[in-house]
Length: 277
Ligand SMILES: Nc1ncnc2c1ncn2[C@@H]1O[C@H](COP(=O)(O)OP(=O)(O)OP(=O)(O)O)[C@@H](O)[C@H]1O
Ligand SMILES: [Mg+2]
Image (cartoon, rainbow, N blue to C red; front, side, top):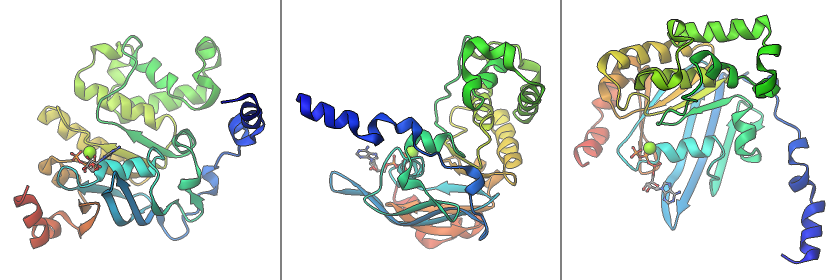
C-alpha cells in the first residue's frame, strides 16, 4: 500500500470509526408478526459448490427449533450466515421485521441479541464458574480490574439466576477447568445467557456427553425457550426427539421437510436421504 492509499484508508470513516457506528438496539427488534428470524432465498457457494441453496427458514419468537440433516447439509453454514461469519451470495436475513443482519458485522450481531454456542466449550479454565459468568457480562463490566468493585446487586442476581438455570450453583467457586465436559458446555451456555440473547444458536450440544448430561441438557434448552428463541443443530436423534417441537430437515443447502419429529421421520424424502448416507 502506498502513502496515498494509506491516507485514503485512514480517512475512510467506516474503517477508522467502526466502533462509532450505530449499534443495533434490540429494543428496535420488531416482533409484531411473531417471527424473530427470517432467511429468504439465501444461497452461498464455496468454489462453485452451493453449500446453501435457496434456503427459506423462519423461526418464531420463543420457539425451540431443531435442525437436523446429513453431514454437509449446510447446517453450520446456515449458522455462520445468521451470525455474520459467512456472507450469502444472495438472499436476505432479518432479525425481527426490521434489523437487516447482512448489514451488521459479526461482533455487532453477537453483542446485540444473537448468541452462538460452538461445539467445543471455550471457558476460562483458570477462573471459577462464577468469574466466568462475570466475565461474560455485557459491556465495560468485562474489564478485569474493575470487576469486584463494580459488581452491582443486580449483576450478582443475574449471575445467581444464571447459575441456577445452568444447574451449577454448587460449583460456583469451582475452577472451570475442573468441570466435566457436560458442565463446561452448560457453563458456556450460561456465559451466552449473561448477554441476554433473544436468539440462541447451538451447534451439536450433546456430542461427547453422557446420557445423564444429555437429559440435563434437554431440560436446560427446553427451559430457555419461551423467553428467547433457541435453534439447536444436532445429530443425536434420541436427543432431538426428547426436545423437539418443530424439526427442520436440511439437505443440500435447503429445507427438505419441516414438522413434528414423527412427521419428518416418516417422510419418504427424509428416509431416503438418511438411508443414502
Ligand atoms: N468455508 C468453507 N469453504 C469451503 N467449503 C465449505 C466452507 N464451509 C462449508 N463448506 C462446505 O459446505 C458444505 C456444508 O457444510 P456445513 O459445515 O455447513 O455442513 P453441516 O450440515 O454443518 O455438516 P455436519 O453435520 O457434518 O456438521 C460442506 O460440503 C462443506 O464442505
Ligand atoms: Mg456442522
